[in-house]
Image (cartoon, rainbow, N blue to C red; front, side, top):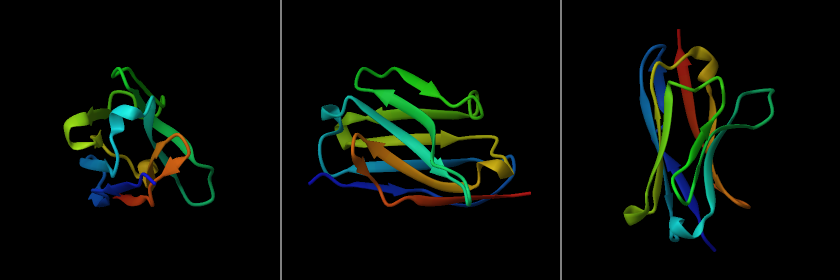
Length: 111
């Protein structure tokens, strides 16, 4: 069973940056689509950014121009570079690939 493990979350001030990592126990090249999702308290989980096997990306409107998703097949890791963070970016961030989910990593942005 493939597992996804997220890391890189933490507490940051508004305007700051964080880089999240999602490392797979299996080959990420086998996944057609991988993505980052987030869930804030009292809200539904939402898509943040996704990347295809071929490297095409798409982003939620709320993060366009601030977040960048990338993948490194050699180390089976997908990244989410988050810049110009806002308080509304506070959430638990999850990595997902098909039916497989990581355990999540907390991102808290303070004002």
